[in-house]
Amino acid sequence: MRPGILRKQKIVEELINLMRGRRTIAVASIDGVSARLLQKVRKNTSGKAVIKVAKNRLIARALEALKEEDPGITKLVEYMKGPTALVVSDMDPFELFKLLSSEKEYAPLKPGQIAPTDVVIKPGPTAAPAPAIADVKAAGIPARINKGVIEVTEEFVAVKAGEVVSQHMAKALSLLGVKPLELYVKIQAAYSEGIIFPRDVLAIDVEKVREDIIKAHRHALNLAVNAGYPTKESLPILVAKAHMQAVALAVAAGYVTKYTARHIIAKAYAQMLALASRLPPDALDDDLRRKIGAAATATVQQKAEEEEKKKEEEEEKKEEEEAAAGLASLFG
Image 1 (cartoon, helix red, strand yellow):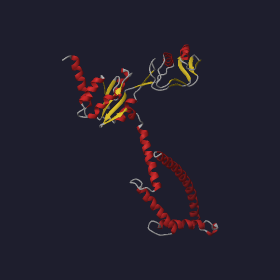
Image 2: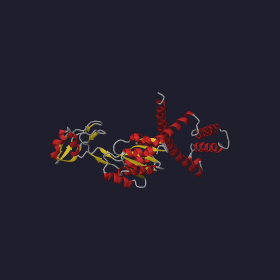
Image 3: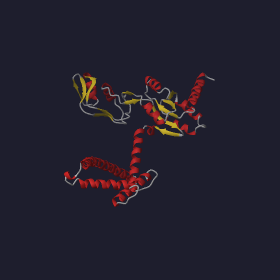
Image 4: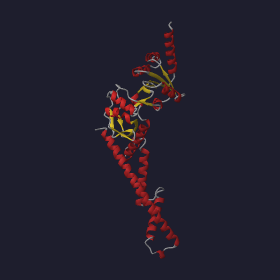
């Protein structure tokens, strides 16, 4: 058997062994990624992930060999375009995506290249020397010479997403030091626990989604409590709310129970102090005067707390109304 074929078989076997028993298997584009950056990524992900560069057909052959063990794994082949690396890890696919996306370098656009995003040049001085002004203006970029360097005079959209970069514009952007291309080991899809996670799914902000879910849960719970809708989560709050309302009603009616007795006594005590405060000071003993003074101070503090609580309740009510409006929009 020819050495070339043996070498390819060895690579395929290595890839198969690399993938077996791993939580996450991903295919990543390394188009434009320099050897220096790839080495840096490998170093910074050591112990967390293994990155193996191989020809697409060899990676596809290794995935096909694992088809019987895990049928869904071969779908990764659909996401392999251009130079590809196989990435294996025991990390969650979202954590792996975030880890690899954090190691980037930036590069200028080349003539004839399609801009992946809008390239916007901000106004202000640049590091480009004055003699380059002709090339910058030839690209249509509003600029002038200021203190020996080129200064962009206003915000300018150099290239829109999807447009082909002209030779004049590529040169001007390079002179101005504009490097809009993000180069990194770009996961195109990951396979984990029988599920394929495409790039657009992996790219979501996990923390923001978690915060949104927590916020939505809180709004839904508030809505259920205010609507009196019993669920596993809202029922304890509804029972506690009903208990407080029942106690308040019994206290207002003067109905004595083991729950209301102390509240009724406290109410009577407060009424006594309020009545005593209307009497002339010389009609009161020192102890009663001290109690009236302390009650007055407590009343001021209580009013301040009630105002703060009212403000919080108004803000909470506003959030609930917004949540209700959001839920209503789901049903047209």
